Every structure is written in C-alpha cells, then in structure tokens.
Image (cartoon, rainbow, N blue to C red):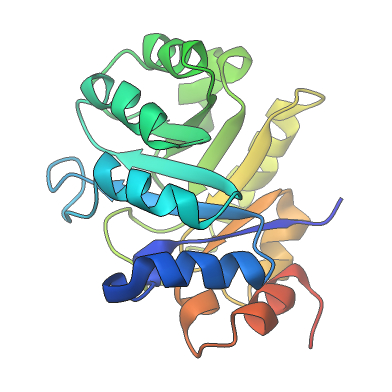
Length: 216
C-alpha cells in the first residue's frame, strides 16, 4: 500500500489558509495535518477549533488533528464538532490517556497517541487496543523546520513490530524531506507528515509525489 502524505498546514500561508487547504487537496494529499499547540505543553501557540471549523468546508480529505496541549480533555469535544476526523493526543500530557482516547472514539472519531522523541515505546504498550493511529515525533514538538532525528528510525521499526496485525496506522512527523522519506517508509511508516517539504516552492503536487517516492 502506498504511503499516505499529510501536509502540515503549520507551514502554509496563514493569510490564505482556506486556499492552501484546497490547493494541497487538489495536489493529491491524503490527509490534512493540523498542529494544535497551546504555548504550555509545547513552546508555541497555534490554532484552535474555530479555525478547524472554518477550514472544514474547503476539503473533504481526512483532517488529522494533532493536539499538543495539556490538559486535553476539555477540548476534545470542540475539536470533534469542528470537523476533525482523527484526534491525536500526547501520552506525556498530564491526562489519563486511556480515558481521553475512549472519549475521542465515543464521539465517532479515530483516536491517535503521540510520542515525543525521548519517550520509550513501552509507554504506549497498554494503549494499542485503544488507538487507530500512533504518531512518532521525529523532532521536538513545538516548531516547524527542524531537522529529522535519525535515531527515531529504530523507534518506528519497534512500533511497527508492536502493532503487528492490528489496524493501526503509523505516522511520522518532523523534518521529513525527499532525502529521508524512503528511510522512514522502509522503517514502517504508513503516513508522512511534511510541512516545508510540501509548501516550500509552490509545487505541491510535485513535492507530494516526490515524498511518496514517485519522482516527477
């Protein structure tokens, strides 16, 4: 199965976000990745559910919403109602992740769990039957444009083995480029999140194709 590409709108032109979402949809993206940061759990502040709701009419593609916030529980329902399809939270945040994941699924959405680079895979071993997606951060979350940490390739391989036959997608986010995408896919990733690698020069379709391994 071909790898899925999820452009991160964190790297889009925020003055024309609706147009940017339509453009990456037409360019052939699979998911639209929305980074939500609270200035507390991570050192940056981005967008809330009102923006997700405003963008929802611009694409029918999967809205893959990554909540880098703590606490997360008070905001899950708002992001679900805004039009998120997948809601991913961090195992390191202070909530009860099992309860939070159940809340997401109870709202009819897919539930994801994310790990920071230093977080061992064992921290989510007890949650595998509660999630639809696992997100590996291959940079420290908080800002775009960071360099990929190659030591995360081993974590991706280990998670691929842990997932086994479960219907869980394995997503990787952080520093993904045309130079390292093949290695990340080979390690077991199903979904690549890419910001600047997609939005860098306006050739969204070509950049998405290149990340998939189909040079144009």
